[in-house]
Amino acid sequence: MRRLFWLAMGVTIGVLVVRKLSAAAEKMTPAGIGGSIAEGLRDLADAIGDFGADVRAAMAEREDELRTGTGLDAPLPEAGQAQLPGRHATDR
Image: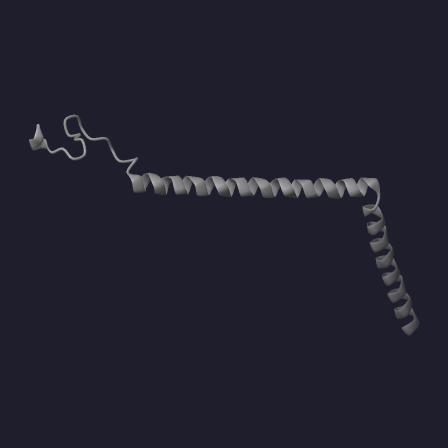
């Protein structure tokens, strides 16, 4: 019974080692290296896209803050209500 256990253990370890070595050898082939580079470039493109989206969102938020702070989005005054700075209605 012990011999059967150790035999099964040896076969299992052998299979795992062979699979690991085969995977490592596959990564070293030109196709494997090309696949790794392609995957890396895909990840880089995704990261750049996410960064761009974050920058655009921050720009829009900051633009809203600036527009609110400067009053650029305020409604225009009605005709006759607009006055120049430093002038009063009684100065006419």
